[in-house]
Amino acid sequence: MRILVIDDDPKISDFLKSNLEMELFAVDMATDGEKGAFLGRCNDYDLIVLDNVLPKKSGLEVCQAIREKKKGVKIIMLSALSDITTKVDLLDNGADDYLTKPFSFRELLSRVKALLRRPNATISETIKIGDLLMNTKNHEVKRGKKSINLTRKEFMLLEYLAKNTGRTLSQGDIMEHVWDMDLDTFSNTLKSHIRNLRAKIDIGRRVSLIQTVNGRGYKMELD
Image (cartoon, rainbow, N blue to C red; front, side):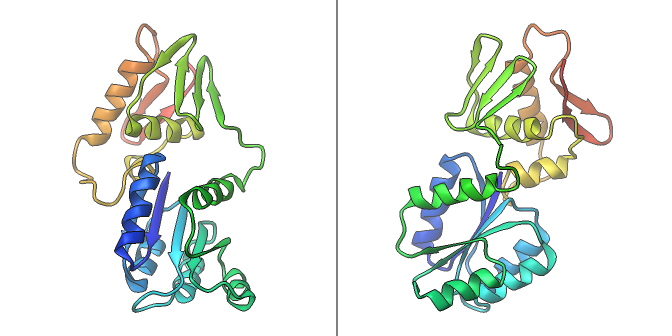
């Protein structure tokens, strides 16, 4: 899943990026409100972490601008202000959650996961497709009784495909949710990761779980 962090404090933004990437999120960053609003409107993010005090545009203005275009993206506001008026104002203008600085990463991560679960309260930590089993909490993958060792990026790719089983995903769809904006879209990164995944999860199988849809992209199907 892909997250946008909008914060002008390099210590905070770098801290969030490194820790969120450890939790298998793809992370983009913006250091001012103008760029943050642009990225938030133009790209397809699963969640945005947004500081309230920013150069060029305030967090409130960024939140309003993003909400006009991206109705469903989850937004967590960060602020050094803890008064009720500020919280209510931000929540009333499109924020989904509010976290007061300083904060612990564990609390932020808990809120991120809670918001990403919100569309469907019954979403499980386990994804099962045929005899393929994924645990999104401890990042374990099994095919039948065999444990499969995946890299972080391979797991992220497999998780995104699995959560969209039966749906054809374009290269752009996959790259927007699994990689950050620094990836060269003309590289063979996606193809090589698909090839590596197939080698690991489909070894000894007649039909691959990951299907290539010619001219359109990839989809995950029961074999």
